[in-house]
Length: 458
Ligand code: HAM
Image 1 (cartoon, rainbow, N blue to C red):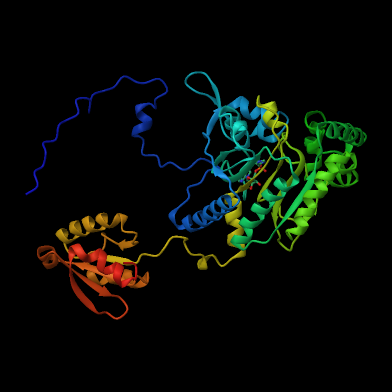
Image 2: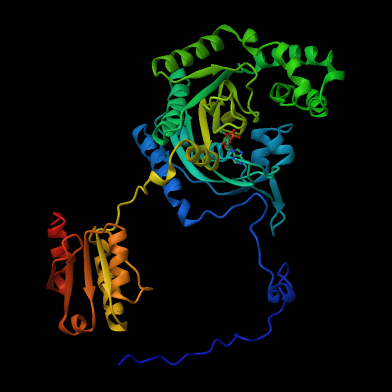
C-alpha cells in the first residue's frame, strides 16, 4: 500500500503579499481575457517540427563538415553593441530595435541579429589567440520591430555562420557554398546575388559620386530617398519605389570605384562560384541593410521563374573592420545568416511537404496496456528502456487494446508489447509481431533483449 505523505501547507499560501514594483495589478491577474501572441510573433507547433528539425540538421551537418563550432550568445545585449556595429541611419537601428531599460536602468536590447554579439564574444574571450581562422555557427531567435507582413516577423530565427581571421576569398566562397548547400538539401533552387562594396576609401569616393548624382535628381525622389540623401546614401540603391527605379538604373556603379586589390578579391570569389557551379547574379545595387560590410556582400534568393523574389532568404558578406571597431585586434571576418521562417515557407512551396519525413526514427516497438496497474508497470518499463537505444511508442490516453494496436499499425511499428492485469501479476509481457499477428509470452525483464534480437540490434 502506498503511503500518502501528509500535505504540509506552505505558510505563505493564501496570504496577501505586498505589491512588488512593476507587478501586474490583481485585477489583471484575475481577468479571464484570452491572450494572443504579440503581433509579428508566432508559436511553432509540433506539426511544424519536422521542418525545423530538418533545417537544423542540415545546418548542423554542414557546420560539422566545414568545421564550424557552435556558439550561443545571449538574446539580450547592451543596446550600444548594435547601434555601434550595425550603424545609425540603418532601418534596423533607427526603427526596428526592441530597446528598453532594465531594472538597473541599463539600456538593453533584444538582439536584431547575432553578428555583433558573436564579434563581442570573439573579443571578450580573446579568441584572436585561438588558432585562426575561428569558425562559429549559431541558431536562434532575433527580434526586429518591423511592420509584419508575409515573411517578415518581429521575432524570427536565423542560422548564421561567421569566420574570423581569414581574409582569403576562399572564405567568402565557403560561406556562400554552405548557404547554397542548405537549400540544395531542402530541394529549393536558389541563386546568389552578389556585389562588392569595396573598402572604406573606395566606398567614401563612391558615396560622394552617388550623392552628387542623386542630389541633382532630388525633386524626383520618394520621401524615404530624400531622407537617405543625408542619412545613409548607399541605401538609395535599395529603394523599391517605382518612381525611383529609373534614377537608380542610371546611377553610378560601385564596381567602377573599386581599387585593384578589391577588384581582384571580388573576381576570385566569382571564380570560386564558377568552379562550384553556384548560380549567381552580379547586382551592382546590392549594398545590404547593415553598415559593417566591406568588399563582398551577397544575398540568397529562391529561383521563382517569375523574376526575383521580394525577400532574400539570407545574406552576408565581409566585415573586415568590425572587430577592430568594436575594440578588438584587427581581424578580417566574413559571415552570413539565413532566415529560417522564410526558408521553411519557400521549402513548402517547392516540395510536396506531406512527403517530408521527420529526421527522427519511427518508433520500433509500441507499448499497449490494459488497466491501471498495467499502465504504471508499462510506464516503468518504458522509463527503464530510456538508454536502450530503442525508439518506443505508446499512448496512455487510449484504453482499449484494439485502438492502441491500430495506432501501432498506422505508424507501421513492427512490434507491440502488451501488458494486462494477468501479465502484471505473472511478471510477463506479450510480444506481438504486428505484421504476422504472431504473439509470444516473455519475462518482463527480457522485453528489451527480445525486441532487440527481433530487430537485429542485439
Ligand atoms: P540580414 O540580411 O539582416 O543579415 O538577415 C538575414 C536573413 O534573416 C534575411 O535574409 C531574412 O531571411 C531573415 N530576416 C531578417 N529580418 C527578418 C524578419 N523581420 N522576419 C523574418 N526573417 C527575417 C543579418 O542579420 C546579418 N547578421 C547576416 C550576416 C552574418 N552578415 C555577416 N554575418
